[in-house]
Length: 620
Image (cartoon, rainbow, N blue to C red; front, side):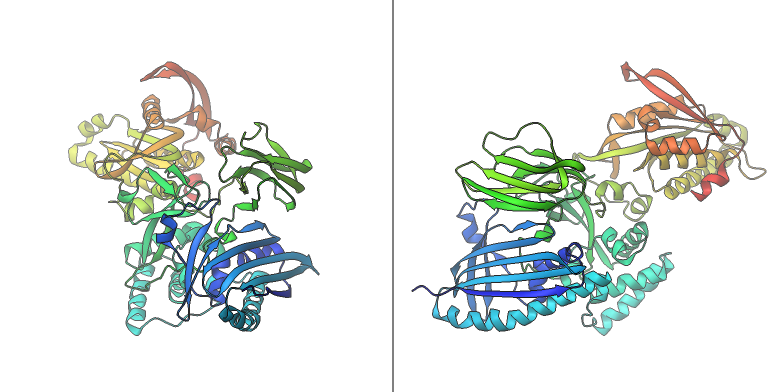
């Protein structure tokens, strides 16, 4: 028996703009939770026996003892104006459900039109749909959208939006003890109070993956301060650290490891159906969660295909075979790529004010043209699917979010190495960390020092020199990797920071307090790709970049720093050298390096021209 389809349409005039509302409204996982829709699960057994095309999912939930199962098409959206999804039910009182949400500018705010089409499968569905959707959901949806409008318009922070019940008295007492430890450790008391309140009151789905930089932006605090607070909170048992492996396409976490030792160099994304090679600079993100002894966080899904799960995707459309779709897109300037889920290759897209205001794109099994597509910030895009199959199309920003605290960045911080000195990759594992700046230093004439002032005194002076170096490296957001005799290897994410650090250390060691013998520090800096490995049970780095940096140190006289051409060409290094033109002298030279005899390297000596630059770099 066929039943009539129910159609519901709700209109809301809201204060916030579509751009402000989109992260809330398009987060359908959060929306379904707030609307008190039951959690969903993947129908694992049935999924294993069916090949689902174009990111479809078989899902299930239970409502008042009634089992409901459906096949869900991928969401379709154009950010930040509309999204929708179609669900075809195989079990339960509903046959089909379609959702569409449209956000359009209206009186300096937004008019949100939210529509549902629901077709019952049985008499139970015919009775339940008007009650559940027409009455209960209508009220809950309206409450959620109005709350999102207040949050978006006021830019209120996550932990201020809702207060969950307080934890037990024992846990609260333990939290107070941990708060004191963090404060005594040097963490800002107001930041500690904010972090503990967040752990106490935030909803579970905000605590499953705590991203320190995103949290810092929410709280309008310095990112490094929040990150270090989270790292210290992990050491005392308030938080747990997670290493999330991120898919290069959907950019969602595919696996999470509690230790570097558990990370493998290869991973798989089930949604995108790709295998990918893990790299620390992009595909491993450090996140946190409350320690289970403090608060148990349940990982629940209320919607698996939320548009906000992939915020870098500005357009996702499912085109039927031999079909055409015309879309109006508001885009930001930058680089994008257009790709199809089940077709090879991609089309590079550049968006600028002078790009084309209209473009026709053909989706074919023959692949893409090699030329870039230049589009305007407001463009009409016409997609032609000329294949005999439906195709899922993505237009996504190439820039990665700077809110991710990557493994490459974290492992190159001294605070991480101090707090987590035993963290290392499994033996034999090699993982790219992307581009790092590597510094090598060594004391000049250290053997003579031992002869002149005696072994004990010289040893103490050498140990003190390590303290000076470590302090300068830490202040410049670098990390001391290891000491080798009197030599030091350190890494930085920024070349200018490395140069500042070593110039500061040279000045301090060369101009010690009265009565203390000065030390001369040789130094070399190179920047380039590195590989992370475990050596002597510690996280270490190797590769040509490391070898070249070591060679450059040997060319230093101790009154200078030898830097490579790639360091010198860094705009921030050029700016630094320009600002120090009265204090340092830069001399270019060229020569081969040991082990690289077939290549001549363009190098620069950065030497001091004044007695002291210590005061200048101490502030830096």
